[in-house]
Image 1 (cartoon, rainbow, N blue to C red):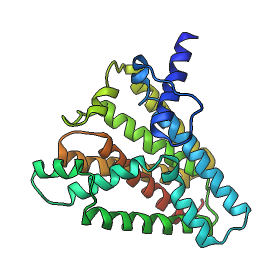
Image 2: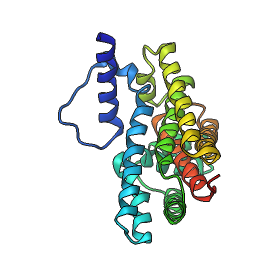
Image 3: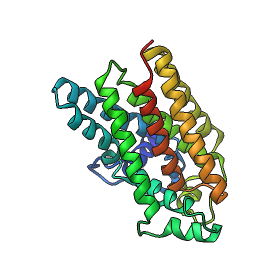
Length: 257
């Protein structure tokens, strides 16, 4: 019972930090910080469920397809308070600057928007809107939105747990304190369950969407990691956003089997 309470507290703390859903009370316990990353994929499942629910309401409400696609595009960003989108913006600006490693770090921490971040934001929302439009316009397994949001956060949690953190990343180092093998196992089990659920819900289409999400997240993180020789919250957000975009595109273009 005591262990269960610790995990519930860790989930609540993770929900408070990584989600914009208002919490009735504030709970923080430094001893439970090592459970925040393992609970991160569960936050993804919750966000994905709301994302899927919003899609269902848009379809049932017969909302105009263009407006429905626009709403479906912004829902995941609204639910996270644009937290991961901020990491996508900062990382895009830094890695595309083609500057020295020192300048890239400076740009990564710079709160001002650069030209590359504006361009990448435009590309992101254009592709996300087109993918959302395609998903709503065809016979797609919209429930896979839950899988996309879950797997992207499994990749994010495991990347911070497994890879060295950047010297400038205080949060990544803080979350890794007192991490044990059970925390890794939990994240992997959630990922395996998400892939199994994808296949059970949508057959091969589900597996393709799951693979696109994972490969998109890993590819984006590998590119950013190569540039900065470490992980951080911004880099994780960058990879998460790209992974979800890849999953959504795969859902839109993959036919039902």
